[in-house]
Length: 115
Image 1 (tube, helix red, strand yellow):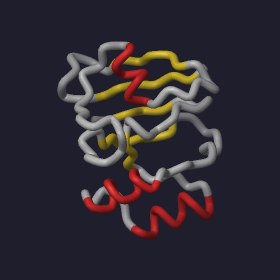
Image 2: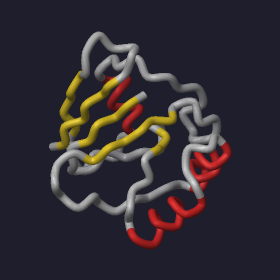
Image 3: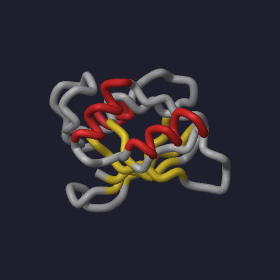
Image 4: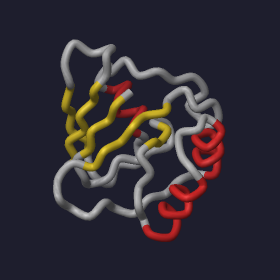
């Protein structure tokens, strides 16, 4: 199980939900399931409207990062991540600070999601 804490000015307070590790649902799907008012449009990784800041909580080494090509393009065009951060994600499994909720697959780690 993973604890996902959502934090946003749209929320009265932070909301923590549980997600099943190994489920291939996107973070956006988890948010929709729990009625978290996260912005989104295309749900396909092309528009960038569901950009989120993700922070790994705890002292564990972050799990491997898988950025889709659409996600890299959308976040880079929006100025959310740099070429160096993309390379660090691909070569050293260092997660970038920004992701797309529609492309981010929840793993077995606790995270803070700001939107």
